Image 1 (cartoon, rainbow, N blue to C red):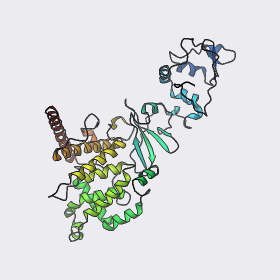
Image 2: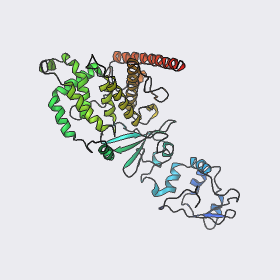
Image 3: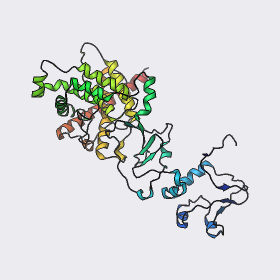
Image 4: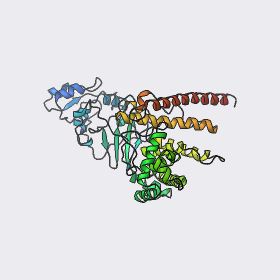
Length: 421
């Protein structure tokens, strides 16, 4: 075998007997109707007329001696004419068991960012170890999924750019966490008991209401379809919500009386959140990104010293998690519910907004650029599912316009600095 030869899988048998490059070659018959053969034959494919007249029922064709074996370019060209229905019949057990032909043309919505924190949807990039363009040709079931051994490919592709996610179990990151000195599995029950000892459930409900009243108009990271709950939301997310809502306790009659002389310890809430986020960053989910955004939005508690290094580190972590979850892409053409599209666009823009304003206040270049972060502006439709008042959303859009102006100013300053350096 030559160095450029491509080995075939051991468990796949291709019944082709090559007699010579200048003589007739025979391929074992494919049990397909004649109509399917006629409809799916590409212009460059071998003629199928002999199979209709051959007494043996075998597909025979001529390969000129100067042509040799088919090139990979011609295989790719022929593959583009290969319809999913024909592929399912030809590949047989190589594809998924479900019959995908009955779902052609149906664009079923996928609940991508669900409440399952036991798996993480890792975005499949164009230059990673998996090819998203190749995944577009794989046979998937009615939910646009292709299941591997311990991985599941979830396709949300509708537009021109391929969009696929690898749904990965959190247990697969145990080794990486152990190498970093972390426990292979976090004790969620113990963490929740620790949080509820500081913030009981009834107080947590009131703090969430304060968040929705005062914080959500500026940072609408949640949707009415997935509201935070003191009993079901992750502890690190609840701790971030409680911490950012704590300064507004005076606007709640019960909290004003109960916590007047015993305020909530912000440092304890921050430690609960950061300790869990250091574990979750290996397999980030949507609540991880939401918690990081709220921690960045919390004003500094030290007015005489700068915590810019700490906040800048948090910004880098949320950008890393957001890239893993595909927030750098525009989900407007994905096959996910409309409220998830709007929520993803809002969160993506808020990360871009935080990056812009922090870079300006700290005198640093932004981490993100408009070339590799696609959601840099919002529209009226992005309010869908946020549950905000019209005036609040209009104010948020005004702030978005100011962010765009500031980003242009920072770009001009960086250009001037480059010219004079």
